[in-house]
Length: 384
Image (tube, rainbow, N blue to C red; front, top):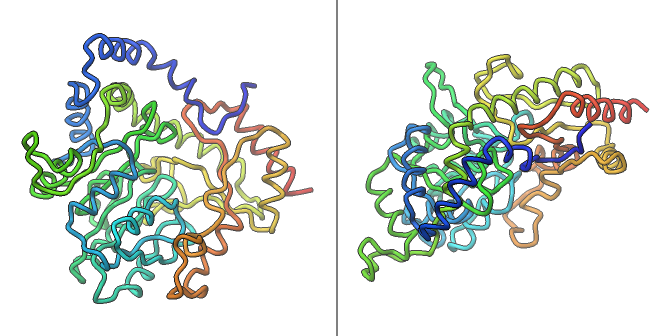
């Protein structure tokens, strides 16, 4: 059996090595390191893939989220509702812009932001909602967009973990994750489903005016060199990273399907285990169907219900099985984001999840014997 890895980027690289190496060599010989032809080509190709009018590449996913908020003209003190159960970058940029983060609970089965909790948290100061498409599937965007329209709010999709996923509306129409809200952000961090070999990110929107504003923000507020029309930042996707992403983008659907197939094998092995709660896909599926396109399994995350999650983690480490605990501390309990406004009774799901969740290896190169070893190790430990 090959060595187990949480993400096998080396194995994935072997499948695109020739194209990547040739592209990088060409860039090195042309010295077009910033805003080279590969960046513009990738932008157009991603627009076509996502079926959005505008993709604006930038330096990383955190910048993408911050720049999206800057482009909307949000003002200090405006309240932004987002999920308590997620990585800190989402709330970090809200705080950096002197906006007011409002954290709410998530759904126990999908791990995504709870629309009912959003509605409850809205005040006259609320200006935007940031649903995080956690672990690889969209939040309940139909309900969220209805809430936003009712209260005249912006919606900013944090799509760092779900690029490639489809969202199915009640009428059967589909949209790609990141192409539903007013604006969206994503990360191309190497371990993402569509990852480069360094940092990278992008903003998506169908709004022409917003896209124009954002294009200025990412480049020091300039539309014409040395003419600074808006307050901006320095956030650009470099050409080498764009070349890597161009090699991977045509394979993204295949990558997603490989992750789904690995997830099905995990689920089949774990089916009926009394102490394991399996991930559940969105409102369009009952569990996880054979032709599911709504989940791309950036992580394969299960819940351990017998209070032995941490003991299981120790056991996996002893067996050299990688794992992740995303996330061990809810944002409302983090020192940087603690606030007297929060009541523990408003975070009952999150407070349980942080004690129960564990993510198992998930990537495009997983092999059957590896999945078998992982699942048998987990099952045996929980039965002992």
